[in-house]
Image (cartoon, rainbow, N blue to C red; front, side):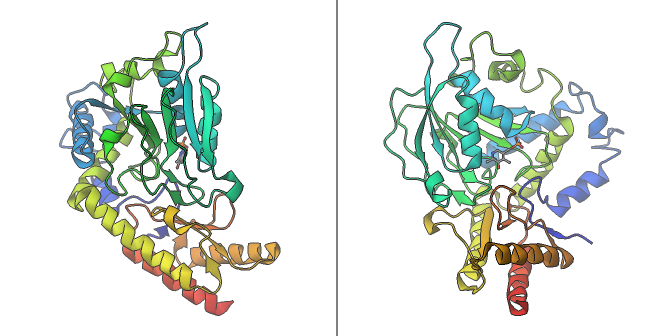
Length: 367
Ligand SMILES: *Cc1c(COP(=O)(O)O)cnc(C)c1O
């Protein structure tokens, strides 16, 4: 039996995608081979990566002056590649500058990694409020070489209500848990990156969308594999890419297009999240700690209203265990944040959200 999987990542994939992949596992497109067995330079695989890219360009309306790269190493490698390519300098040259907004734990980690290569200013932080809101940001510094923020904060369950205006300073965003959850104007950004395992496909592929003028800025000492130029020049085929993951992203994008694309996803995701937040508003035993204007549509964090920390932990443990027994799995909050968290990415059907709401109501009656 399939469960409703609320994991923050790797996370639920559309059933029809998994079934299509299963059907093609030993013979994809009549080639007599699995995609896992294909040479990445073969006439069988190249159309797969090209189709995946063109679907993504269509669905996200990516302008022609942007490169789409399928890389490896997760969002974490981008925490380093972004500063190495947009901020690092040749030995002896004065360091460049970047502003990072500290809206959650991934934002903190990305700023710490960047500080190895550029002078980082933390433009604003909501750490003092346990990251339960996106901080108000000051005007950007026009002398910065780029400006970085995490669009949807997966651990704490917040999302930026709007895109900051940074004039001509390139805007960079980690959209790992935001990508394709609603429409996004790519032209406002210099660079976007996302690990695939939240909303795009299986773990192993990292997507980078980068404006052409920002490719090729890395100083010569940056390792070849960590320069965007290397991958942009070879259409992500410089070395062996994560072929099977790219194929799976292609299947997810086909599904997404059939569902009506990013607009339809945004509508559906808003509907799903509103149902769950409304349930928490009404609940006597649980609440969302996140400020209303900053609430994520993808990761819904909630806590028992109980103030005694031990009783609180007991309720959480019982909730997670009993929910799993009812076929609703992976509802524990992040290990650093505690509480409970329901990640309701694109592939989570509204039925899953309704089943969770029913479970919350039943659970409360049993308390
Ligand atoms: C999951 C996640 C990461 C970490 O991604 P890896 O692919 O494991 O490196 C970074 N940023 C955000 C916003 C995430 O959701």
